[in-house]
Each structure stands twice: as C-alpha cells, then as structure tokens.
Length: 585
Image (cartoon, one colour):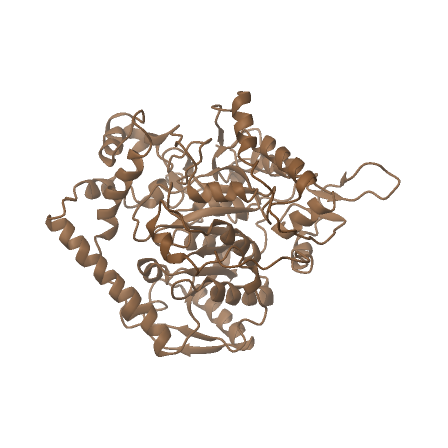
C-alpha cells in the first residue's frame, strides 16, 4: 500500500521550501512545442505533455492530479477498491508537496517559459536516491523514515530541470543485496511489487507475484508501465534497470559508470553502481538521460565524463540508425543458457527486423564468458554502505551495516528477515584493512573483472569485428556490461505467452550512449511493440480536449477515448517542433 509522509504535509515552511526548490532562473534557451487539440494521459510522452502545456490544454498541477488519481486507483490495495488483481504496489512514498511544486512551475512557465523538456513533468525516483524532503529507505524497515540532509546530485539536477518529483518507488530491498532468494520487487518496508501485465499473486505462494516485475528497480518500472508518472529513475549494479525494463515492456538505459553521479544513492558497490532512466519510449529515455549527466565534485568517477556526455541525447535518435550498422551477436553462453525457446524466437524475430533495416549482423562469440565469481560486490557493499550511512548525520540511528544487521535481528525479525540477510552477513564479515587477505582478493578480483569484461571482453569483441554494438536477448548481457561499467539500452521486442514482455539489449563501449540510443530508436520506430497493460485502463477524465470558441473554458474532460494506442503511434509526429541541440556537458 502506498504511503504518504506527513513530515512536511501540513507545514507551510516546508511548502515554501518545496517551491524554493524550483525557483532557480529559467534557461536562456527557448523551447518550441507543437500545438495540439487533445491530450490522453495513457502512454503520454514528454513531448505530448509539453504540447498540452503549450496549447493550454493542461497545467502541471492538473497533470500531477491525474497521475495521483491513477495511483490511488491502481497502486494501493483497498478491499473496497479495484481488488488485489489490480494492486501494483509500486510506490513507497508520495510527495505531499507535488501539487504545490507543480503550481509553482506553472507560474514560472507563464512568466519566463520552461526550463527544459522536463519542466512540469512528474517523475518517480527509486527509493535509494536521496531527496531532502522525502524518506530514502532502500525498502528497509531499518531505514524507515530516514530523511537525508540533502538531495542526491541527480535529484538536484532533475529539480533544476523543472521536473516534479512525484514520489519514491518500491524496490528489491537494498537493491537486492540483503540476501539470496528474495523475490524481485520485495522489500520489508513496502512488500511485493506486482507486474501490471499480470498483477496477481502466485497461487499457494508466499505472496510474491506470478509474473516477476524484475528487480531491483521494480517499482520504478512497474509504475511507468502502469502510467503512474511520465518517466522514472532506477539504479543498476548488475541488471537492476535492464531486468525490470524487460519485464515491464519499457526502455531502460544503464549508462556508462561516471556518466551520472552516484552521490546520494544508497550503494551496493561503487565499481558498478549507476542510475539511469526507465521510460515508455526511447525519446523519453534520451531526454531524461540528458538531464542527469554532469561532473560532480563529490563523485570522482564523473570527472572522466567531461567532454564525453551530453545534456540532450535526442539529436542522436535516427530512424535510419540501423542502416549500415554492424551488430555483433555472441550466441555461446548468452543464448545457450537462460533463454527459453519462446524468448529465443522473439530475439530471432528482432534480428530479422534489424537485418531488414539495413544492419549487418555479425555472429561471433565473446571468449571470456562466463565470467568467474568475484568478491567485488560483497567487499564494496560493507565499505560503501558504511560511507553512505555515515553521511546521514550523528543523529541517524543506523550508522553502519552492522547496525542494519542488528536492527533486523532484534527489532522486528518477523518482518525484516522474511528472506534472511545472508549477503549482508557475508559482507560484514569482510576485513577491509588494506593489508588483509580479503582486501588483496578484492583487488585481484576487481582487476580480473575489468580485464575479462573490458580489455579482453567487450572492447576486444567490438574492435576485432569492427562492431557498432552488441545484441543480447533480454538481459543476458547485463553482467559483462555491468562489470565493465559500460552502457546498455533495452527496448521492447514482443510478448510471450501469458502476456509477459520481452526485450532486446544493445550494449557498447564506454560513453557509446548516443550510438545505442540511435539503434534502439530505429528498432522501436520500426516495430512499436510496446502496448499498455490491460490491468490498469484509462480512467474517466484522462482525455482532455480543447473546447471550441466562444466557450471560455480552456478544456473539457471527455473520459476514456480508447484511442491511446493510435495516439502513441503519432507521438513522434507531435514531437517537439524545434529543440536546440545542446553541447556536450
């Protein structure tokens, strides 16, 4: 059940603080959006939203309320409401000041124009990303109510872009590094996230869904699939953006490590952690990605991104991007294990489409897989979580991983330890002393990870066969790209029996996001495989149309149009009429 925090809900000073968070000067860049005479919330893109704003069909405050109504209807379990078959449970905390922030942004738009393509757009953040005005808990009862002293760097960037932080999304607890065997999307604080493509529990099970929402960014993905916000931010250490995107028929971008700051994000391992977009379209993912790039003095990894990233990735979206592209397909290991017959058929169909769009498919194997086991995550979890918890201030009750373990064991073990905490215990047992055997093994494992995933892995493969990208079915390439710190983009490719989504992934070398997004966009536009889940249909009032003169009402709520799928196919025709290409950041 979603929860609202009352910390600032009734305090005027907090509302003023929320408005102050969006009061930085408007940009000098003038954005021009296409005019429209109607707007449908279901499957609405950022450009659809901006066109509706520009055409005076809609305000950001009204848009926030529409999304809140969907969340109230479909996300929270209520015995008098839609019933458990419609429960998604994707959101842990709603922002009580979202409407006030949206209203302030509406006024700013009228006075000085929009700051960016995200101005007034409601977004969700995974609940391991710090926000100064909302709890950040990693889904843990040990961190319930923990409000950090300031925003994560990327949260601050999103506020500066004019986005409305609608709330925080449920997730696999501690990004799936508390224990083994925890279902994707489960947290002790929030319970199970359900997949909107089949939101029912497993019969005779422990409460988990019959169709996994993927993890660990389960709520961030399920909420966007269910149209509870425009876009969201997830995080990934190995597969935690790609997996939920795959399971929820979304576009997911796992960026190059260092493209987006890790400051203010509850970690697993600094060597592999990164935040990235989840969206219903490649265009929206590209817009969101550009908003979170930038060098952050608090994160040394971002220093290497200077001159290699962009604040706008939409110019790289080209329907002809696959024409002449060389795409590698390593079948050994990536196709021979972990891929069902049905999934392989979807991937083969995608390859046929890619060939038809002019790409040259090069079938050759990556010789360094499967990668050997590594102690990197276990070692860094203790090191990095202790650093994060120590940043919360002297009054924070939980200051170390040892404190988390002790709280789980003593305060509320029935809830906190439903699936145990074996990974946390193993990490706590690591000796972080520089001269320890654990440290020496960690350093050797990290060097081996980089050698096998980068130099002898992805980079050798791309260079040997002169490739633009690597193609993987579903999320099969997540591990090698994660260890390398290299980017991947997943895009919907079809549906299995039982309405279970399945996607394909394009991966590449460091900072190849422009190429990968272009390839994914070309595939998306040629196929348009994504369809909205039937379990969360449009509500009355979600379509708005202009009222002819001389009526003075600016808009009329018409109810469900039933045309959202057709509207989606028009999205790029209604995209921003003129968007200035921004320089590298």
